[in-house]
Image (cartoon, rainbow, N blue to C red; front, side, top):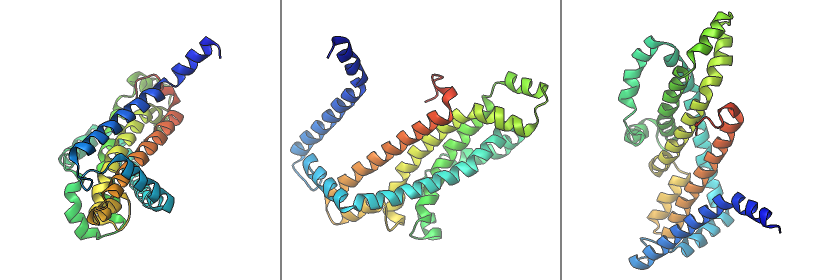
Length: 263
């Protein structure tokens, strides 16, 4: 292989190599902590966890619980988008609407979704509705605030030019405001996903008969710590893959935002 080709190949795979070194360092630290702790019930070795992970994957148990949790996540996220995006546009376009709605939003936003669990358990009972409600609540506010910010950041000169040319309100909304705000909205959706995915574990620990959080609590009660850690790893992997999908969707929907600093 020519030297220039080898250099190009090394540069192409450099991020992967850096990531592999980071993972190797993490698992080395895990192994050292396991040796130092000396209690496999508290902290199992990486080998035992990966053995448990392989068995759970082979038996289909991780896929079963992950699919349930992911479906709940998508349901909650779609509901949050359906409510928060129109409300965000309303608050972004109308100062009166913002002044009316924003105080309520700012009172509710600091309240953790987990704080609603006892009341939500009383209202919804054990099932799919409770975790969907918790994830909807947690994901609603990042989407709302990012939508409002995206609308407010629209170039006023662009709006003035469109109005000067006689563009009606609906085309102005569809062809000027939505494309301008969409990159910021997509960032809000990714933030909402991250917050909601973290909240799903606590919601399923108490209020669901299935899902990744339920599986963690089930195996904790059975003192099967390697399986608990296996499901924790599964949560991280599924969350990462979903975020990769959202980033790909963001690039596809907003190609004009590439290189603009919108992450």
